[in-house]
Image 1 (cartoon, helix red, strand yellow):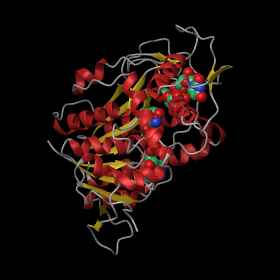
Image 2 (cartoon, protein in one colour):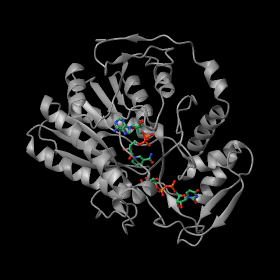
Image 3 (cartoon, helix red, strand yellow):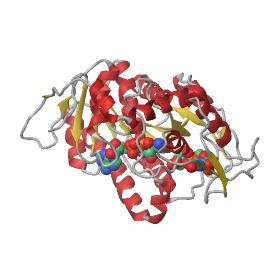
Length: 377
Ligand code: NAD
Ligand code: UFG
């Protein structure tokens, strides 16, 4: 069944890739984003990549429950994929109330609006961070949860809020997708991750070092009990991750009413790679050795993280297809294009956009046309 899907935070890194894959699968999409960690240019690239303009943009805040309800009603939304929120672990430690306020209020607002208008299908962006330093490797969804940052706690709290909401509404169904380490970019190089400031995560840091923006990569610890002593993670290509959302939402839209009200499902590959293995693979993708130095462990890091991805395969027939080489190739391709923004600008056709709804509505949706650049004036 093809659906009308709302992607909150659909202009962001994972949301934009998911929007592309939803469109390619024949769904129509409304993106709602306040652009606090993304930009309109990225949204404008979505129809170019997806080859369809069946996507609309609402600029607004998920914490505005009235806006959320209006959007759900006006666009007759069948399912919501809730990406919007803050995601920086260190920032959440420094300013926990900001994270509790933004992430929890946002989720409560989305759920309240869904309840008000009777929208019954939700996918939530959760994280493998809810497993903490688990002893169960690979990790199944049945593993005990344990979080060490306010960010992680918001993910766990929201999962519990969804549990309670789903239990109170007869036909409401939700899937919380626990992502492992999303990396890479769309193969076109048009969309990818653009961290603001100094990146915390390994892939964007390596990419910036390769592009000459950083002098070298600092490896956080080489004395872990892993094959080469450096930390190991289950990296997953963002396009695979996006396709996992499509599979999950199609599962919700098609499965029978006796389906569990709220599933928690890993999205990972089941393959672990150490920091050094990633560095070597990335160096191979760029064709030169990226400089690095070994430093001390980073506070709060776990030695290893690895998904057991069997539930996603059993439930909605999804499994990842892209390997580390492709993750590095596509991440580097995107980073190279970003290095020369003017180059990208030349590749995007000039501005055309048409508004699809009421101009008196400050949150009116705009349909994106292939070739649209500045989608909101
Ligand atoms: P991102 O920051 O690139 O995307 C989030 C988007 O939400 C941005 O476009 C931002 O502008 C928007 N947004 C933020 N607050 C908003 C609000 N109040 N109202 C409307 N829009 C708002 O992040 P991402 O990497 O794409 O992550 C998406 C989701 O996945 C987040 O919930 C994140 O916690 C979760 N997640 C990410 C990772 C990762 O490594 N990237 C890992 C696990 C879970
Ligand atoms: N690392 C380095 N140098 C860097 C950055 C990272 O050596 O400059 C190492 C880390 O120590 C770790 C590995 O690379 O061993 C991966 O680190 P990331 O920061 O890329 O990823 P994490 O697994 O630490 O954290 C990510 C997200 C969190 C999320 C978690 C679980 O940043 O938000 O995955 O999903 F909670």
